[in-house]
Length: 178
Ligand SMILES: Cc1cc2nc3c(=O)[nH]c(=O)nc-3n(C[C@H](O)[C@H](O)[C@H](O)COP(=O)(O)O)c2cc1C
Image (cartoon, rainbow, N blue to C red; front, side, top):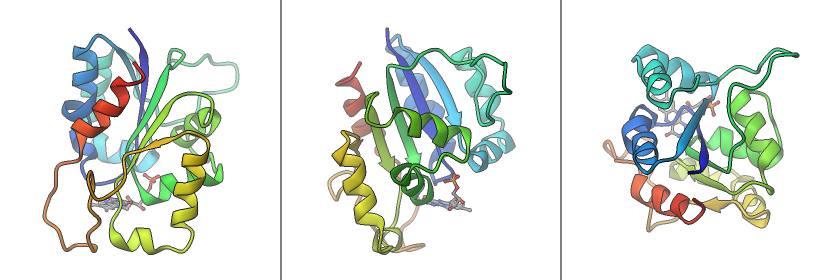
């Protein structure tokens, strides 16, 4: 059994985190600790998913830093997966900006703990001038990116209907580390 740190940001499809990723990992016998960005936490709180995730995993769903002197409520993690990640959180990870709990755990572990990142972005995000250097920087320290036309073709903002996130590709990448 491995301990998987599931980090999610406020991107479309995060509402399916439980059925798309957390439940399959638990079904495979792994321990799952969920950490959300503040906006993702607000979204999942609003639909009751945060409590469902906590009940299912048996661990608190983190989005706030602990107090000094408090111990971490999560176990030591063997592999991290950031899915879905926003353009914002992916960029912050590449730059080392740890201004929330989700980014703190990713920034502390990038390059040392196996890490898979799915940036759930659109074509406009990818045109941001620094974007390709963020992707290159993350790859250069061994982060595995679920990225490219085969898994997530980029479309213009508001031009595609609802799309399932590539949970099977994310899960397959994770299984290579479990
Ligand atoms: C309904 C909705 C859907 C969004 N979907 C995405 C998305 O798929 N990808 C993305 O990069 N940003 C998306 N955003 C924008 C992010 O939520 C926004 O940039 C936010 O500040 C990111 O914060 P976080 O990275 O801390 O979660 C969406 C916003 C809204 C309101």
